[in-house]
Length: 192
Image (cartoon, rainbow, N blue to C red):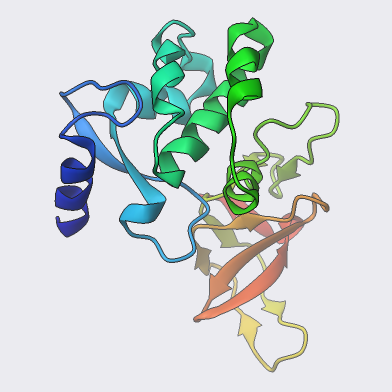
């Protein structure tokens, strides 16, 4: 509740992307380091649905990014950059992207999900069933895995939440098991 109050105050009780005032929710911008208000935005259900479901994107709805991309808050800029990158083939989003400035750390955060990469250059991570994995997904181990460099064994059936992807190798993801961050090979996981 504290984060929601902070974001409501920061945004004036409006969606930080399109300025809608109804159906507002806290949306955590993945991947996160510490969590909290600095890595979250207050967004309406329409924006959240279109962020999470690329097939539902309504180009005209996102013309609001012309204003929100100038936000002083990094999390808002990251979401604006990702959405503009996703829609850049339409023309006007590319023009906005060309005007947008992100410092090095914010740009790295925005690119962490692979948004903005050309499809032929994009590294696609797939679980053991061929389902595409994205940053922030939850997976379950389908086999006991010995963790290199430790005596730990990650047991079959262990859930790994909020995974991160290795953007150079499609076979590697990272996740926390028993409080320890480990690298996991995608052929040994199943998306939940």
